[in-house]
Amino acid sequence: MADLSQQTSADEPRVAYQTARTTAKVAGTFAIVFLALFVSNFIGTSVIAPLRENRLVEMKAELRGGDPTEEQLADIRQLDLQIRRNRMWRLDFAHKSGYALLVSVVLFLVAGKLARVLNEPPPRPRSIPDVGAEQIREARGSRWTVVAGLVTLGGVAALLITSAAPLAFVEAKETGPSYASMEEKRLQWHRFRGPDGGGVSVFTNIPTEWDGATGKGILWKTAVPLPGNNSPVIWNDRIFLCGATEQKQEVYCYDANAGRLLWTGDVPVSPAATQARIDPMEDTGRSASTMATDGKRVYAIFVTGDIAAFDFHGRRLWHKSLGVPESAYGYASSLETYQDRVIVQYDQGDGSEDLSRLYALDGTSGRIVWEVKREVPNSWTSPIVVEIEGRPQLITLTDPWALANDPADGAEIWRADCLGGDVAPSPIYAGGLVLAIEPYSHLVAIRPTGQGDVTETHIAWTMDEGGPDICCPVADGQHVYLLESHGLILCCRLADGEKVYEQDLRDNFTASPSLAAGRLYFLSMDGVMTIAEAGPEYKELGKSELGEKCHASPAFGNGRLYIRGLENLYCIGEPVAGGRAD
Image 1 (cartoon, rainbow, N blue to C red):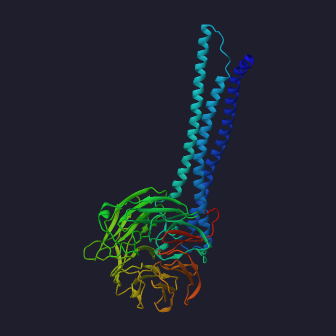
Image 2: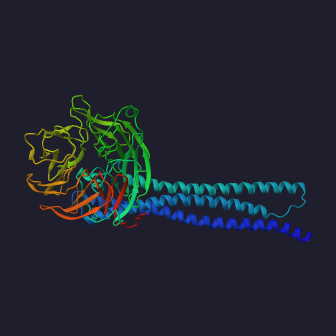
């Protein structure tokens, strides 16, 4: 029994040595594998990815100066989606494989050192000189071990740094300017009613049938934490909207492919708003203004006058209060962007108190770039920036003016005295005309090529058979379509304003009509979408029920339709290549 115990004790160091040696071998093998994967990812990031991104830039440049085809738009969206997913995957892979490589190297060094110590022969009696020489050799060996370890760790750290550098460089290169071009915006739904605020989608593959009760055609449905009547905005695979109560104001970012809530941004309620008694109409609510994005940042404003900017990762860049607005029904104007600026139409009061303003705020800091005082009362329209004869114009409507300003410096270009009352429907630009609505009264068309007061010279025509009180118009190049809140559709010729037809949908509406692929989309408050063919005759193509009440206008993506209900956000359509729906 004693012999067996002695044998076991003698074998223990050998077993420990073998374990340490095997661990060192395995760790070394893993280190080599991770290093190879690391280098492969580095090459893909620094060589292959830039080639794809340069191709995307070339494809976007080819669209300038001409009308893009549906095939060109689809190719650009698909390549852009691939690039972004590939970049995020490579960045995540670089971080994970880098840490795995570091752990493998450290484990290799520790296990190797332990194996070396365990493999040393038992000590034997030595003379004093022999002991001194051995200590010198051990000291030298220890120093070389430390040096080798430091060199190895330094190499791993260098790889981590050099691998991260190309990723950061590629991301910065892709980011380019601090804002998206107008050509890029036309491929998105970056503001209320999409590009130019016209409610017209460039995509022709928009869904036409769905059923909320059975789930037919519903790609995903997800809850929105706080209420709001603002519409979704889309930038690539991100959807933004906001919500508010008296105590909280929040911004939400969703994954467009799966419906996951990616982040929530908090917008503090300013002390002035906390003390003031803000009592908006129920139809307005505390978060009626639709957000806007310039492709780099996203902006939100609330009924309190609090405005904030976030980056696409959910970091709040700035927040400021414009003062609690004096608005009869509650502030509801949506935001617009121009280059790296966010445009705010801040009409309030009765017009006699010098309260109304038009602001351009710097997107990165919130600094006021320019400010225009407006002697006008509160309004509920939203500004649009459109390019007219090669020059951008910022169009706004209020009582009694339709106005155009230069978005670069705020200088007034023209104005027309043609409106009155509580102006709510926003302007559109179609067929070379700015179209403006005075609720319950008329639709007016203005040629936006004049200077100064153009009331007597540039009003092309006026249609005096009424006008919507809430919904904005939409046009297809030949006709303009008006939708009254009680469901009456009025179609007029764009050239002269002559009425073509009217049709009663016998439903209630607050969402503005939209146009895609020659089809008109009318979303009722009961969540019923009526789809009709655009043209000189009313031809209904079908109805689809969401099963939830809706106040917000829909947003259009590539093959997708996004609708905000009172409680949920819906995506209608089919999965895209590489996309996933949970």
